[in-house]
Structure formats: C-alpha cells, structure tokens
Amino acid sequence: MSAVLELRAVTRQHGAGEGLVHALRGVSLQVAAGELVAVMGPSGSGKSTLLHLAGGLEAPTSGEVLVEGTALSGLSRKRLAQVRRRAVGYVFQDLNLVPALTAAENVALPRELDGAGARAARREAVEALTEVGIAELADRFPDDMSGGQQQRVAIARALVGDRRLVLADEPTGALDSETGEAVMALLRARCDAGAAGVLVTHDARHAAWADRVVFLRDGRVVDESVYRSPEAALGTLGSLR
Image 1 (cartoon, one colour):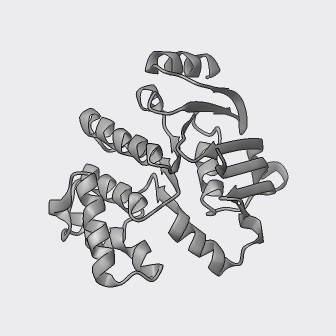
Image 2 (image 1 turned 135 degrees about the vertical axis):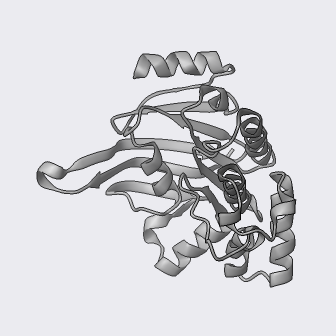
C-alpha cells in the first residue's frame, strides 16, 4: 500500500552552541493507508517533535517529510495550511481548543476554513461529536466542560471530514480507562476505513491497538516491531528505558 506519511532521514535541532538540542536524529518512517503506528519512548525522546514534523507544524533541520507524496518543504505557507486542514487531523497534547467557540464551532472550524458552508460544517461537526459520544455538548463552551470532555472535542476536530492522516499526541491522557479504550477503538476504526494514523502514547495497552510500535530514544528509532498484546509492548518499552 502507498505511504500516506513518509519521513526520510529527518533530523530536528533546536538552539545552537552549547544549547544545541538534537530532538530527532535521522528518523525514517512510512505509514500506509489503513495503518495505525504507535510511537513510544521515554520523555524527551522526540515523540512530540516527530508528530509536529509529520503535521507540518515544524520543518526538519534536514531530511524530508511527505504527506500523500507531497514534500511539505516545497510548499508555500498557504498551500501548507491547506494540506493541514484537508489531509491532517491533529490531536494536540494541550488540546488547543478556542475558548470563545462552542464544541461544534471548534470542530467545524477547519471545515469552514477549507470552504465548507456553515450548515454543512456544523452537520459534520455534530456527526464527529456523536462519534466520540458527546453530541449533547455541541453548544457548550470549553470552559464549561471537564478535561475529558474537552479532550473528546479535540479528538472530534481531528476526525471531522475526510482526513487521510490522523496524528494523536497522548489523546487519552485526560480520559478514564473505559473512555480511553473507546477513543482508541475510534482511531482504530478510522484507520481500518483507510486513514493512516500515528499515535504517541506512554500506555502499552493503547499501543496494542496499533499495527506497529516504533520506539524512540534520544531522537533515534531503536526498535520497530509488531505487537499483538500490551504485555509485549510494555516489556520492550521497559528494556529500552
């Protein structure tokens, strides 16, 4: 199957001189349509940086990032923004909801920015909120929701429309275990329907939903394996700490 996401020998550096930080060091990764890849590793290993590069939020210091065969480095700012709105759904670790917008308005925002009519965008937003189990909160503002409810709004925003690439940074962090498993089932179903997914997680039980688990340490891929049980993923993670 063709790669929806491809990282080619990507490096990312921050700072300079004695303050130089090598966030990623020569990372290569392909994620195909229908595939969910979990990224695990210790804090500071480069997991979130990998997602930022995959979503076009940061540019690599060297190497190349391609989404559906298009190199992000060759795009204008306008075209890059279009790719992010149309092709990429992103669940941020800090959620990034707009406080002045309702749940439905937050979810509909990327569709409206991409030219969808307000009525159609709201219909799609309510469908996405229904998918994550909080349709009744459509007209509530983020400050009037619990942390878990806000997290599900952020997940709905990432799933709304026909997103070919879903990137999720600890998407179950504010959820109880039952709701977290339901969210993982949603991500799994979206990938089974043809999207490509990349999940950053510390939870081996959630990594077990993935087709592959990629382990990072000090900005490098140190293991890439297929796991069919959370115990196997947890055991490998423990050996890599």
